[in-house]
Each structure stands twice: as C-alpha cells, then as structure tokens.
Image (cartoon, rainbow, N blue to C red; front, side, top):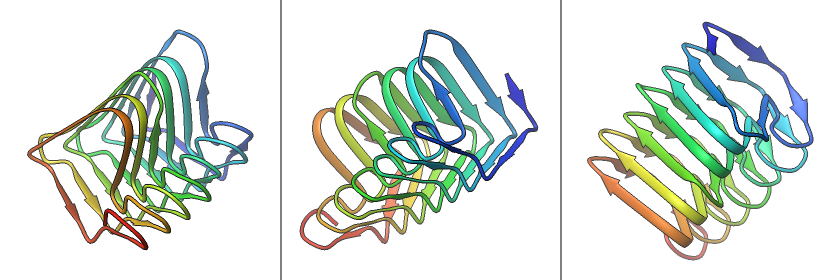
Length: 174
C-alpha cells in the first residue's frame, strides 16, 4: 500500500514509476507520480498481473513508446475516486492508457491532455475489458493517426455516465 507518497522523475525500461509483473496487490491512496519515463511501455506504470487500485491519486507528465501513462496486460486495474492522469505522451499508441488484457475500470476519474503520435490519444484497447463509468472524463486528447480519445482494436469497452471533450485525430475517430 502506498499512501501520501510522491514519486518524482523516475525512469525504467518498462513502468517508469511502478512495474508489477507477478501476482500481487498494490493499493495507492493520495499519491502522486510526476515526470515518469519508460523506454518501452508504461511511462508511469506497467501492470502485468495482480490487482491494482489507484484512488485519489495523480500521474502527471509521463512518457513512453507505448502507453505514456499506464500499460495493462493482465490482472485487474481500478482507477477511481477523482484520480487524474494528465500530460501523458506516447511515441506510438495509448497516450494515457494501453490495455492488452485483463480488466480495467475507470470510475469518477479524468484523463487530461494526453497524446499519441500514432493511435489513441487517451486509451488504446487491443484485448481485455475496459469500463469507463460514473463521471469519468477524457479532456484534450490527440492522436496523430486515429482515435483521438479511444482506439478499440479488439476487446470490450463500456462507457456509462462519462464524457470526452476536445479529442481529435489527424485521420479518423476524433
């Protein structure tokens, strides 16, 4: 459990601030991750299994080749209670979040000012289940190719009681 923590200016190959690669549980409350960089995936976080709950926390200014903010490949990820992912950048796809497995729920939280040079300014989904519910928002996301807010390649996306504002893509799906 991480409570009232700040992780600043971190770097790794995968998961600039946090890399969870085995079955385990991480709970994050009232914490900040600022200026995280990953050379490959998950500028802020790379989740490869286990259970992750992020509440009332922020991930600010993270960058990676894929998944500028968070990379999710298996397990369960919940981002809730007013959490914020802001200023995330991906050189390829998934400005704020890239999901390729597992279950991700975003509840009453926001993705702001995220971008990907190619696909999905905010969320890139290529397998897995993603729920965006109960007052969640995507603001000011941009993709160089397609999917200004979301690019759904395969998998399942459910959106309820949430919104996307000022999302654009150079080619398709602003």
